[in-house]
Structures are given as C-alpha cells and as structure tokens.
Image 1: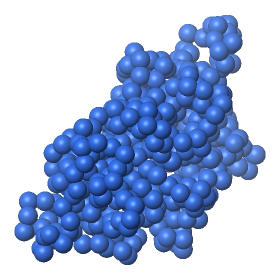
Image 2: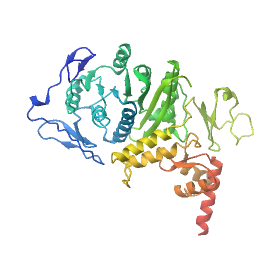
Image 3: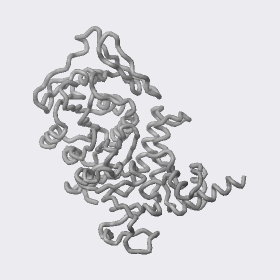
Image 4: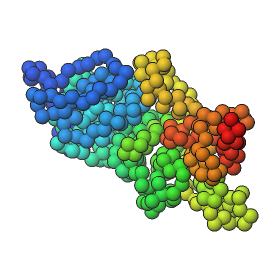
Length: 431
C-alpha cells in the first residue's frame, strides 16, 4: 500500500509528499471557484497527453482512469448529502474508497467543504492524476486530504482497526459492491452516511437469480419493475449485513440511471436492528409477504390456494426508497446553490422533485408501466398525465417514477389502472 498526503503527518504508513504546484511553473491545473448550472464538454490540452473535464465549475484531469460524464448527477446527489451532513454535524470526514481520477474527492473537499478526504484507489497508475487533481485544494496546518493506493476492503479494515472512523464512505464500484458492505459499515461513524453502488442490471432483471442470492441474499426473478428491484436488492443486502453487525440502515435517497445501468443508494447507519415480494404474471398485481406467509402465497385473481402464475422474488427491501424530509432539504440546498429551482428545468431539479413525490408513504413498492396497462386493456397507451389526474380524482396516490419515464407509482391495483385506461380510451373515441 502506498499513501500520499499533502503533509508528512498522517495515520498511514509509507508517506510521499505530492509535487507542490509551485515546482511546475507551467501548471496544468487551475482552481475554478465559480459554479455553473451545467456541465461543459470535455476539453483537451494540446501541451500534454491528458484529457480535461469541467464539472460544476471544477476543472480536473481524468488521465487514463475510467470516467463517466453521465454519472455527474450521482456525484451531485452525494455532494448535496455531504454538505447537509457538514451543516448539521459541524464536521465531515470522507472516505472515497474507489476514487478513480479523484473528482468525487475534489468535489467533497470544495463543494461540501469536507474537513478531510481520504481518496483511495487500487490502481497505482492513477497516483499522479489523483494527487494533482487534489492539489488544487490548499491545506493549512492540518492536511485536508490524503491518497492511498490499496484494495478498498483493506483500507477500510485498517481504518476500523485504528478506530479511524469516517462520517461518509462513498463506494462507487463496478458490478456488485456487496463484498465492501461489511468493511464499510465497520469503518463508518454512528449516524454516518454510506453511499453504495451496483451496476449489475442483469441480476436486477432476474437473469442471474443464483448470483443475486449469493451477493445480496435475495432470489430475484424477472418482474416488470426490475430497475426498482435493483435498488431494493441493494438496500436489502446492506440491511442484512448491517443487522449481522448490530446496526440498522435506512435509505435517504435511491437513484437509478439507465447508463451503465447505475443503482446508487445513500444510507444512514445507526445502532439497532430492524419481506418478500411477488408479482402475478396473470393479472399483473404485485404484493408483499412476510416470512410467516411464505407458504401461503396466492394472488386474488386465482381461486386456488397456490397461483401457478405467481412469480416470487425476495427477500427484498419493501420500505420507502427516499426520506421525504431529507430529499426536501437536498432540494432546498440545490436551489440555494443555483443547481435547481427558479424555473431552471435542470435534470437535477426534476429528479429531486420526482423523488419527493415518490416518497409519499401511501405508495407501495414497484411501479406500473402504462404500456403494460394498455396491453392488458387492449387499448392504446393512455397519456400519463391523464391517468395520474384520474387516479388522484378517485382518491388514489400517484406519482411519476424517476426510474421509468412511461410508468407511475400508485396504490391503485392493476385492475383499477386497466379500468381507467379503458375509460380514457372511450372518452377519446367519443371526442
């Protein structure tokens, strides 16, 4: 393991000071303090073999690291959560366990005003680009950042053994990051934030049930709201690992993006401990079952005690995906920073407002695709706004889904949605 820090004092071994910026009169990096409402396109510096990006006004080099411009929204959400934590607690220490080029670490330092960020990456080739990116942040008497080049589980375990705990741990991994959950929870302070990731869309789609069983303890089969299942599968895995350690985790927000795909969840970890889902292929209804009911699962559309059309997945997290109050605070902060509000119409503004709507406690897990409703009703796909308006007039809860554009979350049954779709078709034909 190699450790890099802006000062020689550090709790980690094998120290090496990064190259001070004044040593290079033709510095490639510039500190940009203003924030922009949008992200600019990649730029290329003809004086070097590095590619530069600008995100929220911060210029950084990506070098040879893997970098997704499309993941900026997930980074925005993480920074907003970190800034809220700093405001409420007065301190913020962050561990960026798989930092890549270091842009998340840089944003935590500058935008969330983190007191200290430990940027870790297992690839020694990324040392120079990470160090130079973070060198934009000046340190006083105490170092504000350090870079380690080690396996993520190893660095988190070392922090735990040294009782060097963090307020926020960000794990932006490929595939499943279930192998990081235990060491991350151990290295986290009580009431701390854990930002986890999964990019395993095949498993959430029910195509690898044995793999999801091994990684998350859930046997997942194909269901129409598979992308939401990916988030619930990830939360459920964290809940089980935390329960073994004597902790409970609660999701503050859950974010899905189609590129990748990316499943990201921000969890709050505290002391304490805290069911099974089914979907009927025949009628399209979804239901929730506890462990005690596993042997008595059936769908109302079937007269028999056992429904052959019933597809069962689980156990999964069936609680809320978002914390309404927390998301509202994030939205207010985004408006304060000019990232949302004032008719900005930005993607982040729309996303946070959709998350607020999705956090209605009356809404069950899953979502209903209007194309499936139309197929079952044998009509054209009804307008989303018209369906939501009718549902609300009839007293049902309804919201858009940030996961699926042509889908709604509602406590109305599939049969009720089919009836409404037919009514809307009849009204349209009469006109």
